[in-house]
Length: 177
Image (cartoon, rainbow, N blue to C red):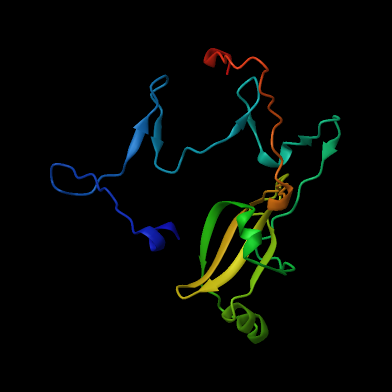
């Protein structure tokens, strides 16, 4: 959890008798009382009707319907061995500190030896599958979640320089640069 990584603080509102209060907000337009946990991101149509997340469809650039990818939570995933360079092309959005209940000895040995593995990860059923990277260090087992980034690298020997021609006229006007 985030609190186990960074610690946490909790503010407790007290009444005049030093008893803890239940926090809530009052919606200003209609005066509706909104208790903590009652509000979340929801989808509504143009008539302010609630739309269930399962009713939302994805459309690609040609107007075709896109199927959802199922959640990978509690579903075994294939892991593929990778290396440190893979992490250089990775946009991390989440970090998990893992506490495995059971770990196959062969897999644990590979992690203990510094091997790194990637796998598909999808927290919710939606239209996008992220990648996960699992590894072990002196502080435990970790998974980082995010997206692969693809770059076109060139070798140092292939250094491409811009062509710049010096004008025949030696009087260079620096405002031209």
